[in-house]
Image 1 (cartoon, one colour):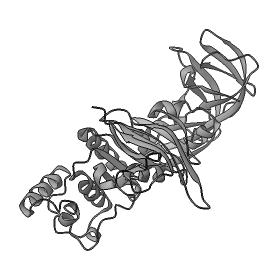
Image 2 (cartoon, helix red, strand yellow; image 1 turned 45 degrees about the vertical axis):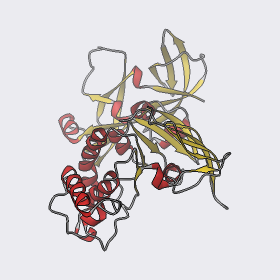
Image 3 (cartoon, rainbow, N blue to C red; image 1 turned 120 degrees about the horizontal axis):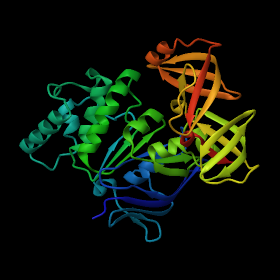
Image 4 (tube, rainbow, N blue to C red; image 1 turned 180 degrees about the horizontal axis):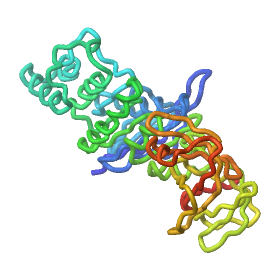
Length: 362
């Protein structure tokens, strides 16, 4: 039996925004769907409507064969009857309760002994052994996250909803726990909807990406595909496409489009476009390869003479600003940057494979 969400609804706020969702769908029992967008785009409102914490004004929400909300028939299923696990952004742990009592909070219908067994099993699974008696104020950010997840999972939910699950953590802890959370979500094998505005989290945790802007869904698809091939200029901005430059189609045929950006010509593997058509040329920074000297041609590539304009360390990577006749961004590991001995005003070769040059019609 399908356990996917199918929803379309409108949620309005007095003197505020209107959230209008059309064709919201998850895909598969072990799939994680990421709701992605800037703050205020409506992501958390969508999550709360799916959880039953907010009631839409119009539309419907269905989970598998069940209808959770239908405005026309005035049907509304309470959050408790939906059997969902919900982890809010701030985790919402009870500060006066121990870890064990926080986790056991929703198990009031079980006997004391049954609760103890279930709590012990869940804590062991999530690596919380030895923390039973601690209060939330005595825990690290990562431990608080695991307690919040344990409290949601101990109820054996059919759907897991996570609102910015890593946002309360410091940078190093967030990066460390991304892999742990991804592995956990795969082990659960239940549909998950996760809200984030961080690209690294979406790539690390998601299978499907739904991009939101001003209360609307503006693009959906596999995570990497959406980040690499935004549907329009607005989505390119939301997914932080590093290089977006205006260009003009020079020639198109046999699946290859030649496009001029200033005095530079690029090849793109793109559906045919009319010669003379105006486009935006989009290139992700991680798809730019830097080498000293002229490389061997092993696949369709754009080889561009580049000048290093600047370098900026960003954690474990270095952002390189290049001039190739237009501004081009590249990202390298610190080790790769050191091996190339890059410094401002250096001359270098920048390569971009034709499939990584994405065109958006203007």
